[in-house]
Image (tube, rainbow, N blue to C red; front, side, top):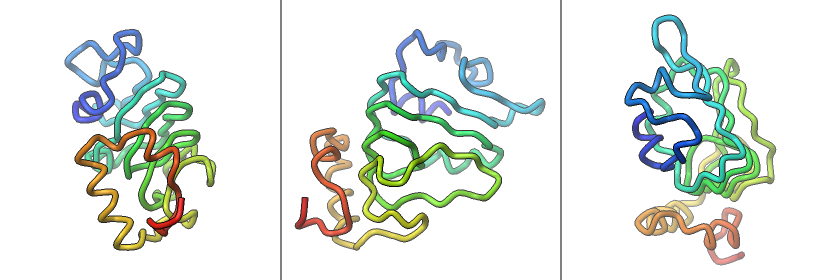
Length: 144
């Protein structure tokens, strides 16, 4: 959760000022302090989602809709996320509408072309610029 906070640099109005993520607003936890819910849609957030989100094995609800997130990672409707469309465990409720991001393919769990992965690695080094994510979609790096 700290990696997510660092990656998206949330405004103080989001309520993530405490050092303990279990006390953050819009984050739900089980009685044994396992994150079960993250709902931070419509916050004008920018950045990428860290791979460590995959370690939240008790996550049941994930909502990041209508922000300006970029990069390859877990899902979310109306962002500019790139890379393969993620496939989640059937118990995870994810708000993601196919075609509303910049994923390379619409089929969840199917990897991108190796050249697309190389291109994503390059744009990662410059922070996944929004202009790139907004103008390029698909599994062919030569076609915009």
